[in-house]
Amino acid sequence: MRCAIYGAGAMGTVLGAYIARAGKEIDLINRNEKHIAALKEKGATITGTVHFTQKVNALLPSQMKGEYDVILLMTKQRYNAEIVQFLKKYLKEDGAICTCQNGLPEPKIADCIGADRTLGCAIAWGATFHGEGVSELTSDPGALTFSLGALGAGNHLADVKELLETMGQVTIEKNFIGARWSKLLINSAFSGLSTVTGATFGEVSKNRASRRVAQRIIKECIDVAKAAKIRVEPVQGHKIDTLFDYKGWLKRAVSFALIPVAMKKHAKLISSMLQDLRAGKQCEIDFINGVVCEYGKKYGVPTPFNQMTVDLVHAIEEGKRVIDFANIYSYDDLFQKS
Image (cartoon, rainbow, N blue to C red; front, side, top):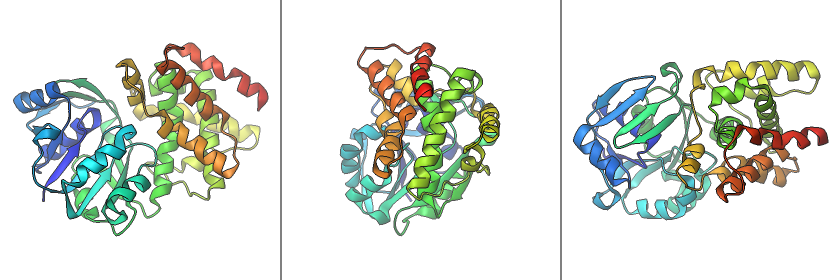
């Protein structure tokens, strides 16, 4: 079986190193020539909460040949239309693309290659790219989990599960959209605010001002999911929609207190969107908090805190704002209105 990771950057390098260390063949593909050269020469160096170097098979997109049974897609979602079309010619007729991206990318990928060849994976850990063969795992090694699902028949679902199990625990989700929404909820709150403030997930969850905003973003995500009749799946055994939903003051206080506890194993993470902005690139905010806003409009649920996050990130992209923790006070007026 031929397998590849397309977009072997921060998380793809870590995952590829784990898969190769387990003795499985996989190609790590990336457009970054210096990164690929370093991977070929020195192997993948994984730092952070683990430390090891692993020999890997790395190549540029221009060096791809033949067809693959499985391609794990780990690029930015902004470029999916052209990337999936490009990968289509390298995918076997009974092959599968498994998107490991944030948001809800599966339906549009299925439009290009078919539902049976479309798998999705929500990843509950994070990494930071340092370039030239080095990637930092920023999550606790005990919190390396994957939620895997299929839109159609699920070509190679078992094979993808076996690949991912070389790194962590894999759950095959029958309610895959619900699992996706769980990850979207977390990303909207913590990736979004990490991007706006420049802080880690742990710093966002500990500071009372940013935690207050995160709590509102989470609540909007839960309210939208309810309206859309999406059953939010547990994350690492915890029913986050139950834990963080509230009506009265007591449940609100409990959910507020639980936020730093929930983020303890992921406290060192920073958003990949923040990494993009710092590198002068546009990020995926429209595919994360923006998706919540899109669904909110469709189902008549207000999402002002998610929308403010989208607006702040776009302002940073346009040079009208800078990444700064003081951005958290831009949400103050929303509290007065709600």
